[in-house]
Length: 113
Image (cartoon, helix red, strand yellow):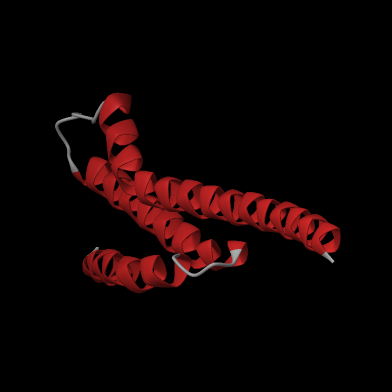
């Protein structure tokens, strides 16, 4: 059980570098953040399963607690993926707008000659 705790904390430390990598402008760079976050969730579930088997009194955590823990961890990659997607959409719309404006400027420049 002790190695699982160390793995969990190591994965939590890896979230920050994965977050920084995910903020670059390419879509595939969010993959490490998704992998680290999913690994944290899986180790958390494995730790809870080990603890519930060790407890002899039969108490188990409710599904709401599992869902809340998963949501707390997975909200980070979801928000980053949304931000990266919106940033990509903004850049594509901006590029299309700049192309349209440059054509308009060319039309006006051609009329002045």
